[in-house]
Image (cartoon, rainbow, N blue to C red):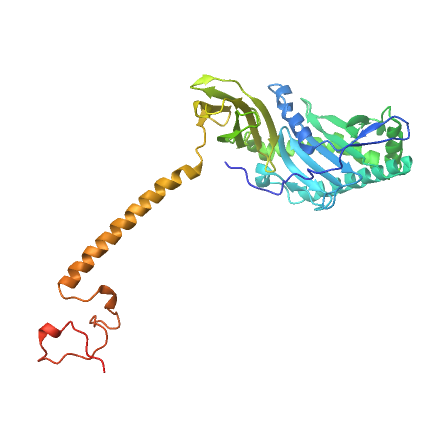
Length: 397
């Protein structure tokens, strides 16, 4: 099953560059926006902690920036079922939308409207918090506020909630749904926590979401879309080589559009293991993943190498050879086409010579003006005309 290209593009891959702005506490805080894919890679590790009888968590990753670049959202959110992204939202579109295989989930009609309302509420809280932080330091800053909210299911289907928050990449606050308050040791915690406590119903709604709505949503997804959690998409593979500045070559083994994210890449030289190279992995916008691995080899030795991948979507390891540049086949195609043109021209010449030898005109002089196949207009021949002149042209005045 190929994952659809849904509306789950990366919500915001851009953000303010890192800088340093002195906060009110007098201690420099790193200012910058962690990339959204960093969290998704962290979520990739979650399945490895599940027990045999446990179920995947439902998590929302929320991000707000105080100084977004032009055309980028100031707030965006992604929803995750285990390592699968199932939801996307940002302040530009302001509509929660399903991702990947979850586009096919048979949800109740109001479900995505409810997700949209909840995320708009979170958006308002986050952006107000950034405004309060800027007011506190008395200047515009490059603040990035993030939240990881969600739950796992206990054996009795009760909620095991998660609600942690980070400012500029550092954990600074958590929410306790049992007592309904935000707490932490940073000075900024007091600013944000006090602001949110003053918002009507904010603490109550947060507790209700973590203890009631989240486990209900998770159970609903497991009932309606369990098959999507078992989705297996094998990778498409490619092995390429390019020259490096050091005079060697860099081999790139790339795997595209696979799920689940666990995958092993390694290089082979003449069929023997040659290492795994420098590997990286990341999520696509459609719920699948991509990976690549680089290996430096001796120039001219590239054709000895292959790339091998192991994945749950493959019945056995897949081995791919080095790509041959497409331009290498052009001369062969040109020669074949040229040879065919010569043959056609020669055959046409022979047919024309035989036709003229038989006293027939060149075929391009024939017309299809009537059903009798007349030659060029010259008048009908009288019955007593010399048959030897039947194929001659009439005299012109």
